[in-house]
Length: 502
Image 1 (cartoon, helix red, strand yellow):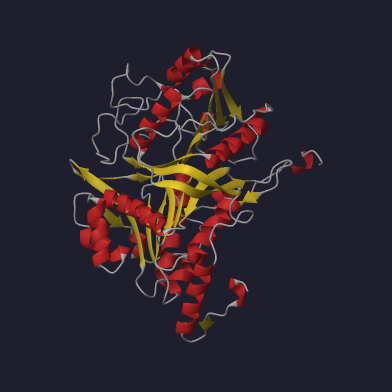
Image 2 (tube, helix red, strand yellow):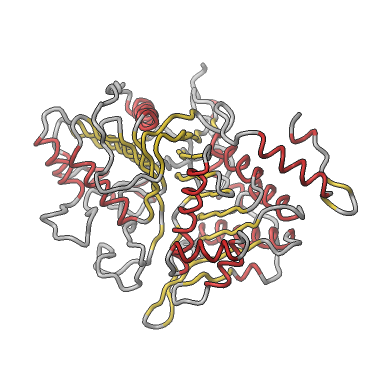
């Protein structure tokens, strides 16, 4: 029996009570993670943790880079060797990333560094284009390669953000090693360390990366090397798993001996067939929600995401849905499609929200003249206390079938894993509300498990969550004209006839 075989609705009263019970029982009876459908593999992680915000990720990454013995593999949408991973420390303690990598290969005769960057980053991404096109002094070493990946469809982006060290430690998530990504959990508007190239302060930014060791890290390295081969033609052999534990010494793991799924998105291109595991995983996870959905997204505009959430909100026994998104859009195309379609999808969901279970917010922090917004760059889904997804995929069309993506997901199999997933959600919402995670968890418990009730009770500090205007205003709810061109679901190939036959 499948979900399509179960008839949950009657025409007058919506979902019946007995059908709601049946639906919940069905969802509880099958795992979300299904290799071959919504993930590439489910592989054990010796240890795994969520790293929240750039300071936590970049500092752990720098320490791990300094321990690398044989291989550093970096895959990114953008890369800038001039950034410092710890800008709040003196340069002699934390030099620019490019020179740091150069010093490491000079010190260690067996170490090789490979950096693969989306080719269009030279004109589209925020990092300095010159070193990507013409090279830089720190790149002049035979065991340090920086290559631009040109193997992608027109208008597509290689959007994965991966770092693998010695094929046994991997970082996967939303953060590229480029400018304007570092921030602390305080997100102070006037931070003297969050500086643009011209010395001005860039806006606060919130993001998430996951770090893993063990067999899953080996599989992530395999994925990264496969992409390197496609882009450069060089085949790189995986190193055997090390008996040494590469886990950061000062980091208490969130999970140990946990199954972790790797989900991918690849567009159909050349001999590569389309892979849409990440999109399938998002839809399956959201469909399985029974109590709560918590989303952090830079962009949430995809109609198929709206379809699932609309059904959940219309169900009398459905989950609460709390979404934290970026509010301010930059550039004409982003405002025209992402900002406009975000608001239109919010209106669509609000109209389906018959039981007042939807909240869509953006975070703000205090500033000298009022407040400033925090850019949400994270790509996270937490369902109930049972499912966690962290990766590079946005909830927009191009992340479904045009761009190259990589996400990691964990589905709880024990009570301890459920508590850990819940604690990660509490850490995130506590950060946005300016309260201790334990305080947030306590208020959730007092509210009978309601995230919305807890947020509304605690949402009175200088750091707080603002509701989007689209939660209240009237206006269109269908995708904007031009969406298929500016946020396409699949590659546009005007020169398809030139493709080599298989």
